[in-house]
Image 1 (cartoon, rainbow, N blue to C red):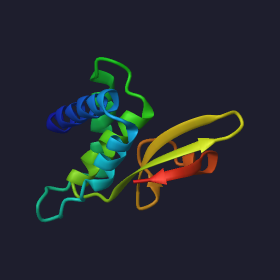
Image 2: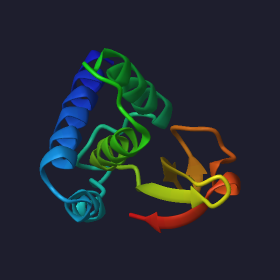
Image 3: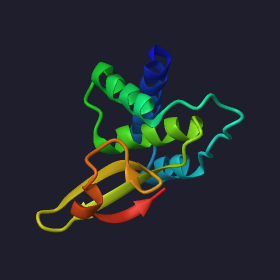
Image 4: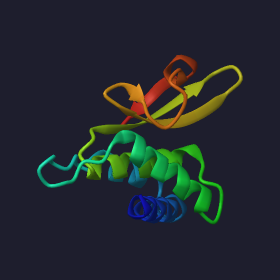
Length: 125
């Protein structure tokens, strides 16, 4: 578990750097182009373990990790462990809010399961 937390923390730092130094399209490209590792190439950890590791990394991170950073990092982590994760970005109009979360096979893994009902999905990558 400690190794998963460390890797999650490093991904948070990487995504934080991308978000600060590059345009949003670069973050989108990085997440979109990350391939799902083959099951043979990885020791597949459970969704719950990886999601908990990312939660712990967010607690240990030196600043608040917002939903876009957390969801992008989790999507990369899950794909590197053989899970076909998608980062989902949604918005609601009244009052205007936007939010990002991560899904595997259409199921929300790092947020409340009803997020797609609250937010209109704008992008999946």
